[in-house]
Length: 185
Length: 185
Image (cartoon, rainbow over all chains, first blue to last red; front, side):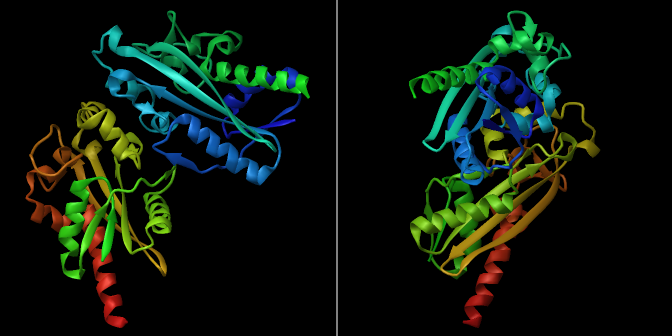
């Protein structure tokens, strides 16, 4: 049994879909203090450590950043706050007039897994570009403006997104490590 | 003797100028982890607690946010990161076409003072508007685009800015509390 510590149901569903074959997966909405000015790997790791000290059962935390090189890495680890404030329209406005080359971006997720033996971190990344306007109705957050091979993440069915998304890649890494560890023990 | 924990020399000079009559003031550039999604008062307080655990001498920390209501409070407590990435031009771009009414903004600083008896927090705020373009050569950070009564903070001499700035107001509150406490003991 693994708890996924998140208040975001979309994230939970993405993660649960990938972990369905390794046992029961629950959502736990526990507030974890996050440190600032840190790498997403460190943020996720600290959240997992904190959550484990309270829940004392195997759990996963997630921290995701969106990095736009032509904006010096903005919004970076503050992707969630920036989305809640200036939103997709704010990002598009900051890139108004930017050429294709200046619209490149990547998402990166750090999945941390904590149990009685400590904390492990798994990372996933997806490279793409910021679209010229929002497209698609699926997903959440920046999905409508993040484009990979001509399609935004919000234009993809969840099965397709789950094959290539940053979060899916991080969760898959955890999944494979977990399965192998279970075999070994 | 009071240490001001900051890597920002401009901040140090602003603070030092106001505290010149209460004793020696030093700059200490110590990295303090900051918690995310928190009020600037909590961030500053936690930094002071952390710094005191290491330095074990009276010290001041500062945390400042810029809040723009028409951008849902962006950039908020992430003002420094946002300035380092999208900068003043990014803020102006996000407000392109915004009327005077939608350009209102405020700065708020939380000054935390830590000594052997604990941590105290003092706050200062200044209300203004985001200018249509950067003006002035003084100050730092958002000063060229933050306007008060027709002048940007960067158009003011430091003595004038020190009479009204958010940081100056927070430091003055600390100053008066400190002076009174010294009298009482």
